[in-house]
Image 1 (cartoon, rainbow, N blue to C red):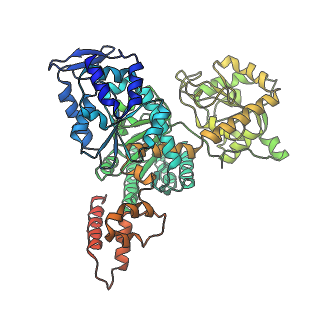
Image 2 (cartoon, rainbow, N blue to C red; image 1 turned 90 degrees about the horizontal axis):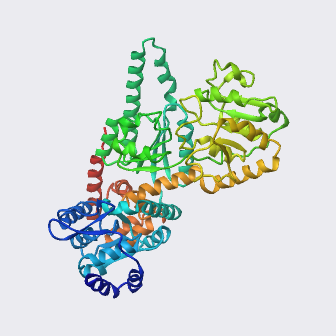
Image 3 (cartoon, rainbow, N blue to C red; image 1 turned 180 degrees about the vertical axis):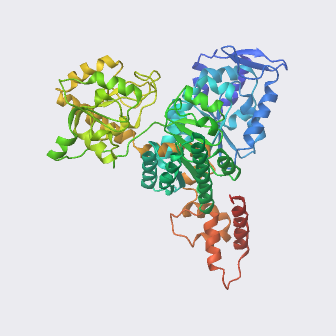
Amino acid sequence: MEHLNQNLENLRQTVPDLVSALWNSSGGVLSIVPSREGSPSARFQDQWVHSAYDPKKEARSWAEQQLKEWKPGEVAVVLGVGLLYHVEALAFACPADARTAIVVPDLSVLKDAMGARPLGSWINRIQWVTGTPEEMATQLTALSSPLRFCTYGPAARLHGDVHERLQTSLRRIMAAKAGGQLHVAVVGPIYGGSLPIARYVVSALNELGHRVSWLDHHVHQGSYEAFGSYREERHRLMLQSRFADVLSLSTMAHLAEDPPDLVLAIAQAPLSLAVLQHLRKKKFLTAMWFVENYRHLTYWQQLAAGYDYWFVIQQGDCFDALKRAGAAHVHYLPMAADPTVHRPMTLTAAEHQEYGADVSFVGAGYANRRILLPQWLSHEWTMKLWGNEWDGAAALSGVLQRNGARIDTDTCMKVFNATAVNLNLHSCSGTGMDPQPDFVNPRTFELAACGAFQLVDDRTLLPDLFTSEEVASFRRTEDVPQLIRRWLPDTEGRRAHAEASRRRVLRDHTYRHRLQELLSTVGLSQPDRIGSILRGDRLTTGLKERAASVPELLPLLNRFPTGQRIELKDLAADIRARAAGHQLAREELLVLMIDSYRAETKDLV
């Protein structure tokens, strides 16, 4: 009690409201246990929050690691309270003008820390961030400085869900305020279902005002497939693998000629681990949006450590698997729709006749669909099946359209719009419904964006994306016929669901939303790189303000229009263009020298 009184009295001079709240909190969350060294340590539910041997030494080691990344001007945001040894070590190790904020999800834990040991005057230099995750995000944003997150894992695990909600709120705030233009290189696949998604990503980035370099490997599909003509499988696989390696090197050469701020690969993009490692060595940032089921396509195991950031459409076990394989940062980013493509359409009578039906299904002939769809045929309704890979599905031959030819996106949209009940059955390798139904497929969002009614097999991640008033779902295959009977005559009910799901997509689930979240996630983790660009720190106005103390730079900056992003290479190019017949000033020579060094370090090939 003596330590608590002393520490709270010390803290009262700067944050009296926090002291009052601490007095009213219960405490008793942490178990205080003496360490071998003698200082108090702590446990939570049989796990140590600080070292059982020497918590002070452990804290100093942690603080030294954080200082290696912490840049001048950034606010260090500490996640994990514990007994504050690590915060104390950081406060003593950092420069006097550095700012530190600590996130306090539970005042009872902070009260335990205040009562465990005497704390010095350093606690009055700390910004204490309390409240709901949304309130804490607002407080951190109000600091008006780049945020550098410093996570003390043993203590942070007590409130991992709160920290995730906090960072989600921060990403949304950053996305809403983003004013800077990034240069993003999007690396697409050679072929496959992720190819249209890559195009939607490019479109969304352009819509957000970023500069996009689109590395479209689809143009090489014919050459890649030509290797499939070899009778020997080992010859085919060897040549296709070598060809993918050539495309990977081609990607690297393209990046070398026009270095981006971020390399964003979409699932199945031809980027080898060797190239990814070389990109990292040259300080390129890379991210992968893995829009696939990680259980079925497992090439991520070889590439996990190669990308700086992974964005995936699954959670839980997917996160754990990628991290075990070497991924440093893994984030959930579900699928979406592009409202310029997936939209309501006014169809002619002839189009309604061709594409319309009581019930439709669009998709490839995976094993489980071949087994289940015949069970949903009935003389009570008309049904049409669209898509390819249905060879041999005799039970469905009577409803298969265009002899199982692949259909384009525009045809899909017409089918969606013309159908009363769109069936949306996720694929799986078994013969029934997906036994691990977590991710939500692109079709769910695309149907919703069209304002089309759908019946989708239930997914564990679906309720976070759509309510039952927006999308109707089923859990058992035997329930589908009865649900079709329920919804077919209910035109108004179907329309209400369809309109509600479309409103939800436009509000929350477009590719624009997803790319904003992706970029703000990377920006939050890279406050001095991506974050500074998104904040607009490299625009003319902001640079001039920061250069006020160095007036020699102002003439160089004044040559550029207001609101333009300026990088070192832009200054160097402008100086070189004006250099003929002129003696260069000292600051111009320094810019050229630094730019030459930059070009050497970025040289990829």
